[in-house]
Image 1: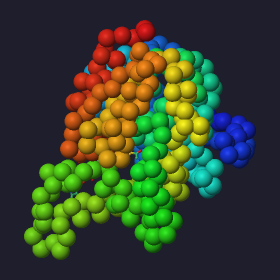
Image 2: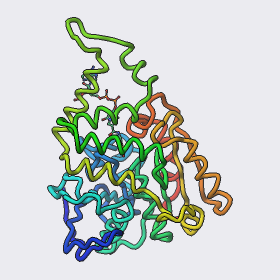
Image 3: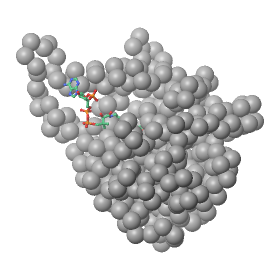
Length: 323
Ligand SMILES: CC(=O)SCCNC(=O)CCNC(=O)[C@H](O)C(C)(C)COP(=O)(O)OP(=O)(O)OC[C@H]1O[C@@H](n2cnc3c(N)ncnc32)[C@H](O)[C@@H]1OP(=O)(O)O
C-alpha cells in the first residue's frame, strides 16, 4: 500500500523552490520500530513495490529470502516524479541525485527514523545510496550499492545524452529510448545465448528484434515519458563530490560498512571503475569490501543473478543485526 509524506519548501541544488513535494513509500515485513530497517532504493524504471508478487526484487527480499521479511522492516521510497504515485515533474533538469538523496533523508526524518540497518540499491538506486551515505555518514550500518558507482562516468554521460535526444526528438520516444538502453544493459554474449540468430517461421524479424521491440512496448505501457526523462537525467547527475572530484574526502567520513558489488560483464557501470573506488577508499577505511557477480548478462545481472547476489549478501543479513 502506498503511503504519502509531504516535503514542504524544498530547495533543489540548483536553487529551484518547490512549495510541496509528495514523497510516497511502501513498507514490508516487520512493522516499523520492531526490527532493523532495510531501505531499498529503486533503479531507473523501478518503484517502491520491491516485495510481493509484482515486486521487482522479490527473489532477493521476502519471507525466507536473503533479506527476510520475517526479520527486517523494509522501507522503499518512490523517487518523486517516477509517476508510480501519480506525481510527475515538468522541469526535470531541476533535480539531481543529490536532491533525491536529500528528499529521502527528509522522508526518514518525518518518519522519525534515525538509524538504518542497511541501505541497498542497484544502478540509479546505488547512486542514491552512495549520496545518502555521504550526506549522513553515521546513519546506516551497511551501505550496499550494486552495479553502481558514486559518479556518472563519461561513458554513462554519453549513453544518457543519446537517450535524452531520443526522448526529446523521436516520434516514438519511450520505445526507441528503451530499445537503445537494452543494448547497454545486456551484452553481445547474453543476446547470443538467448537468441542465437533465431527467427520464428514466417517472421521477417529476428527474435532479438522482437524482444527489443517488446521491451520498448512494455515500458511505454507502464512508464510516463516525463518520468523517463527525469530518471535518465538523474543518472547523469550522480557525483558525491559535488564537482570537487575529491572522492576520498567525500566518502571517508562514512561510518558504516561499505559493500561494493559489481558485475564482471557490466558495460554500463564498469567493474573496473567500482574496483578503483574500492581500492582508493580502502586505504582510508577498514570496513569496505568488493564482491563480483559473474554473469554474461551485463548490467541487468542485478535483476537476474539472484543466487549469486544472495550468497554475497547473506553474511550481512543472516549473521548480525546489531553492529
Ligand atoms: C539504469 C538503471 O538504473 S537500471 C536498468 C535496469 N535494467 C532494466 O530496467 C532493463 C529491464 N530488463 C528487464 O526488464 C528484464 O526483463 C529482466 C532483467 C527483468 C529479466 O531479464 P530476462 O529474465 O532475461 O527476461 P527477458 O528480457 O527475456 O524478458 C522476458 C519477457 O520478454 C519476452 N520475450 C522474450 N523473447 C522474446 C521475443 N523474441 N519476442 C518478444 N518477446 C520476447 C518474454 O515473453 C517475457 O515477456 P513477459 O515479461 O511479458 O512475460
